[in-house]
Amino acid sequence: MKILLINPPRSPENNILKFAPEEAKRFIHKKLIGPPLGLLTIAAAVKDHDVTVFDTKGEYDLVPETPELSILVRLLVEKHQPDLVGVTVITSEFDFCIDICRAVKKVNPAILTVAGGLHATLCPNDFTDPSFDIIIPGQCPHIFREVARVREAGGSFDNIPGILIHSGGTLKKTAGKAAPWDTADADYLMPDRNHLKRWIATYKVGNSPYPSTYVFTSLGCPYKCTFCSIWTQFKGKYYQRTVESLITELKSIDEYPVVRFADANTVVDESFMLELFKRIEEEGIRKTFVMDIRADIAANKPGIIEKLARGGLKVVICGFESFRDEELKKYHKDSPAIDNQEAVRVFEQNGIMVRGNYVVPPDYNLDDFAALAEYADRNRVVYAGYTVLTPMPGTIYYQQVKDQIIDHNYRKYNFFNSVMRTTLPHDEFHARIGSLWLIKKGTDVI
Ligand code: B12
Ligand code: SF4
Image (tube, rainbow, N blue to C red):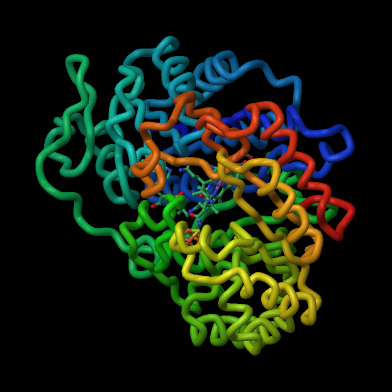
């Protein structure tokens, strides 16, 4: 059976970039680059079928004159003649997934369309558009495999527990509970990056001449920040991979000298990381590693940062979020602002470049902006990111402020647009965040 898995394009909505002063524009994120790990995992689950993975992000980066999405999808479907099309969905790309499935159905309504991923997990009931046939929430490679089997063999999807089926204009949840699946450990599926060969040249970050790839060492997060959808996706659980499966994967990706760990927090289990880096050294694996590490970990356990730096850790993304303890408390960050300063010191002492990210709440007034600018200036990091505190559906923050949301256009839910009323005039609010991007040490972005 032929399966086509499509990674949707990025949302172009970026009011920070739009309203930023000219001199700041070149530092502001325009796009994040990286392979779709979730889709590769799904592809691995059905590798006995004839599977094609198509990364539209990579395609638009590689060939900017690629036709618009519905035409691209039509051409793809005509070329591959799939029986089943799968899309991966995060909130800001939800509309594009609808566009993809509509375009598929226009060519051939008999093609089964299946949606999965973060947004399908957190908000499955959003998928009311009839172009979606089946929605599979959660970590579901085994369920997708079963859907493919039933599609091929014929039969009813109603007998597959834990999925949503479009029928007669409504979404219907099948009875029963999906069997558990341990994506990180016992059921780990090695992604086959050969699917992405066409776009490898586009997977470069910053000024690096080398492509980078994502590898996850864990899934979920043990912390519970109010604005974050990662821990809610995994219902507060944290899943760790095994050291040896990581070593096998790292040894199999010679063509990627830069590896970004796609974890919420790479250092949670200290002994695990020490063992992993011991094995990396023993195996002579030489890579540049990029990780997300919390400030309190670096501040309280500088020894581990030193060891990781010796093993190739070069860039750390650190969610500073705020410079005010009362805001950090409100976000349930569980780490005071002083940790941010100490973490920067520890990272820099070890030659690690820091990307520190602040989130700016929509109610910031001129004094708040001045105070943040003054703090960020005193505590400059090589790269600094300043984004909007956004109520992502499925988060605690969303529940807290849902009545105050004035913009329900999901394309804007990518941290670069306020979807709530701002205290400052809308354009000025975004322009001021744009200006903040100038406050950093480095001369380029990652
Ligand atoms: C890798 C990654 C990316 C990659 C690849 C994503 C892609 N599809 O192209 C890149 C770098 C491109 C990316 C980009 C962005 N990302 Co991102 N990204 C991640 C990251 C770090 C890891 C996700 C991952 O690979 N997990 C591991 C895999 C195995 O799990 P999974 O994706 O959930 O997949 C499993 C299931 O969901 C399911 N599944 C997934 N897809 C499908 C499809 C089908 C058909 C089925 C059946 C099942 C299924 O099966 C998989 C295996 O079990 C997460 C943070 C995190 N640590 O989780 C953020 C995250 C997903 N990203 C996020 C965001 C916001 C973005 C950006 C919008 C950021 C920005 N402002 O620009 C951009 C979007 C594009 C852009 N503007 O450039 C948010 C999403 C929030 C939300 N609620 O929507 C997250 C959660 C980070 C965060 N800080 O909150 N991202
Ligand atoms: S923001 Fe970071 S530390 Fe907080 S819950 Fe999300 S991933 Fe965990």
